[in-house]
Image 1 (spheres, rainbow, N blue to C red):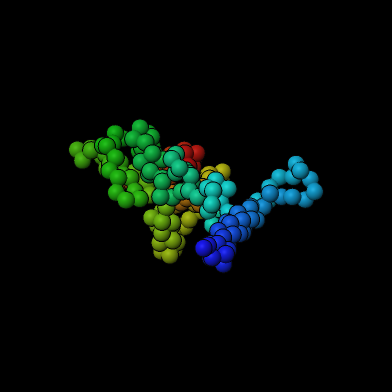
Image 2: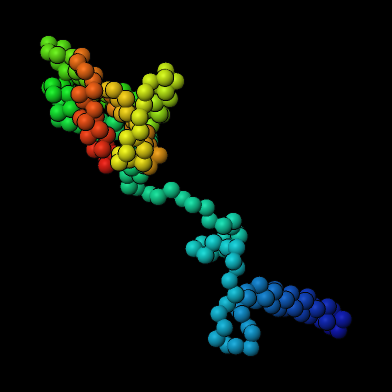
Length: 199
């Protein structure tokens, strides 16, 4: 004889299981905001803190600026300035009035030197901190350094040397000859204008 209580007992777990599934389905549906506002065409709500490009990502903080990919560094970046590109070998030769050997680049400097078999002559180019520190040292020695208008953002000169600042990048150019250095002032200013235009 079948026990009626046993039949009811077996039906209860099935009903409990169905009820649990229904609750789970409703809970899952409730987790999705479908934007019901009485308007069937209303767009779904957007989680402003989530990454819109990656589904399911956690809220993120506001995007921080990222470095640009590829490309050359900005010319006004002192670390990117090549001193040998600011004054070329032919330009150094014209300023000195002498032939010079290939450039010798060391750190933030570039030097063109006349051959040892001929008259003494040299053009030195310094950039960034090396140039600025050189100007500071010349001022500390009490040398007469005059402002030169029309070159870069600012420029200063003394016999045999000129300093310029263009876009925050300092450049110093020294010309070495054994005769009167005042004769080379115009040549130095020409080199400085050219260098400023390349920054």
